[in-house]
Length: 129
Length: 136
Image (cartoon, rainbow over all chains, first blue to last red; front, side):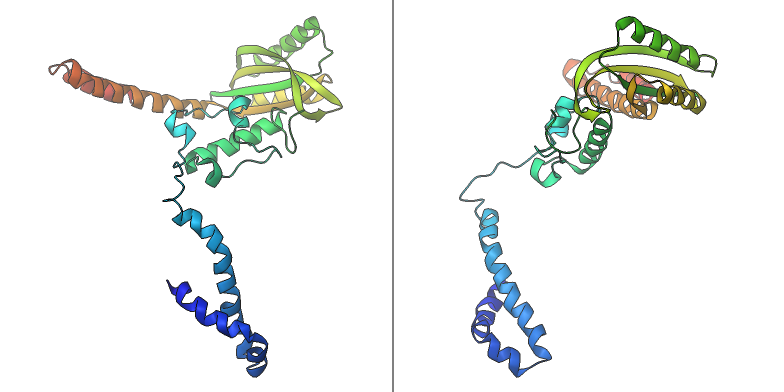
């Protein structure tokens, strides 16, 4: 809400930003940046925002932790097929926010992936040959 | 000082089966004098490596489960390091993880029993109630 109120107010001065910046040297950068940058950021996150609000329009299934759902407690480094599901094409560990894995399981998962890498079951970088 | 370790190592793919058995026997023979015991040896077979190791693209994976103290592992790792056909190895302590898993399993079993009980019979709860602390 606060952003929405600021946005129109800050956008108008942004139009004559050069004048404003020269008028108050010390205050300009400070007054300009939050005013000039944030609405822009807010404007950018506007497209990013709709997914949040667009939850109504586009139904997005809530991500759930695979390990909690399937009750897999034993996240083992030998199980490279399972671990492979959580490794990106580039070899990176896929972040929790994308996979929906819960924090305790992600912790064990990442440890297991790193072990598997050490014994050449998973690649450090790039796809497994 | 009884801990359980898992040793996974990779030997070069062009090694013959006899040589491999000999190597495993040699490694096993170093465990007993140091006060440990080999619980199991599993040959996981030849597998493509995820990246090249010492110019090899494939390797034969072997998994050994060893019980004993740190001295046993120290000696084993030293052996693995100087053994030329072994291209990579990894030692993992597994007893604590196993303990954790057993605990979870016991907890789940106890819960299963409790949830199954009301449906089955009403007079039985005394028995699982006595059992639950024993398993947990």
